[in-house]
Structures are given as C-alpha cells and as structure tokens.
Image (cartoon, rainbow, N blue to C red; front, side, top):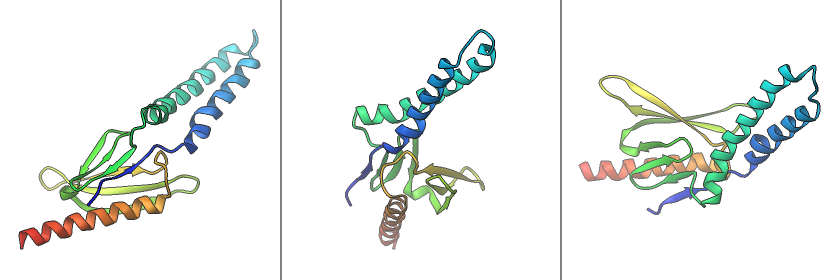
Length: 152
C-alpha cells in the first residue's frame, strides 16, 4: 500500500488570515483618543488569530509539507502533531457541524481499561471531507485485515 498525503487547505487563508487582518485594519482606522482602550484588545485578539492561522497554514504550504499522512503503520496529523497507530484504533466515527468541516473521531486503546478519543478536523486539510474520511477508513480496514490474516 502506498502512502497517502494531503496538503494544507488554502481555503482557510481567507477565513483565518485575511478576514481577521481586515477587521483589525478597520479597527485601527477607527482608532481615536476616546475609543482606544476598547479597540486595542480587539486588535490584539484578531492579530493573534491571524498569526495562529499563518503559523498553521503558511508553515506547511511554504515548506510544501503534508498536513495529513496515511501510511501502513500510522496516521499522522502534522498540524496538531498527532500520531495514531492503526493497531491502537478500536473505532472510527465522524461528525459534521454546520459551516465546518468534518471531524473524524478515533477511539484508541488507552492504558488500563480506559480508551481515549482523538479528533482530527478536516478544516485544515485540502480535499473533499468525505474522500479523506473514506481513505482513512479504507486504510484502517486494509491494515486490520492484514493483521488478522497474519495472526491466523
């Protein structure tokens, strides 16, 4: 099986970078002696949001790095530095909120009797949300079926 890679989504540049900078610019243009104590925190928050998305999106695009990688052993979500090994997954599910991308939930074997849930959003990943989900599920079942055939 070959490695599947997905790049960072360019659609979030508009939402995460351009819009906060535009609103911050409007706030700066409206700045005067009377309203600066109220507007300054808004400018700081919007700038922080834009810088966060710059770090998330531009770092991967400018270095031509993958945002999501699926190989025979694991899934790597580079944006949030999450690594999930196929052998540790007990369940995969998904959910979609209106106006947002798909959230893919992985139930992973934890220590003792506890399992943990890891969420990977597809907002920052370039490609169709359902195609990404289907690729993940197909890879998971291929690896699991290969493991089962090796144990029997």
